[in-house]
Image (cartoon, rainbow, N blue to C red; front, side, top):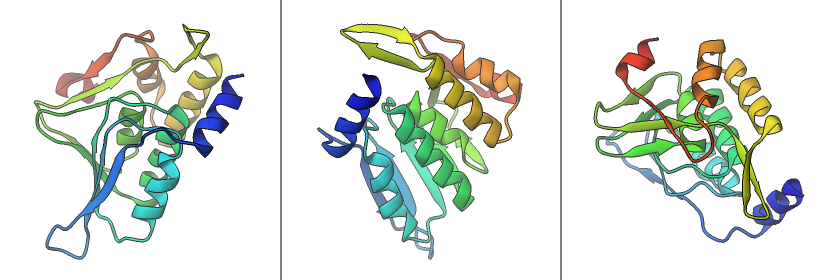
Length: 171
């Protein structure tokens, strides 16, 4: 049932993250992703960023669609892009997974990058998704991250957040 809903939302997005290119004074614009990542946003990201000679992606989002976050992350990694989270902003959940794909990752000390286990909602009930967490584990493996990263990313329960800071990032 959750896959059917995912397909329906992919075809008919209600709202979407703002995805735009910002000139940098160089031939490489900055891609900015702001707002909730909804089904269909990965396709828009690929269309907007894929045709530009982007140098980096700045992310600010509470998260959203796991699948779209993973597709955006794979596109970031395939293009060899740098990712960043600006001062005083947050990138969580699906956004944080996309941020991890940066070949170089930056976060301001005042920025928040947060992770939690993948989950699904059915009939108003939230439960951890084994399939979703398996997809996240496979994705992290593709990025070359080890088991410690997999545990860190999936440790917090749905509704909770495991926030990354400089000390945790060094680990």
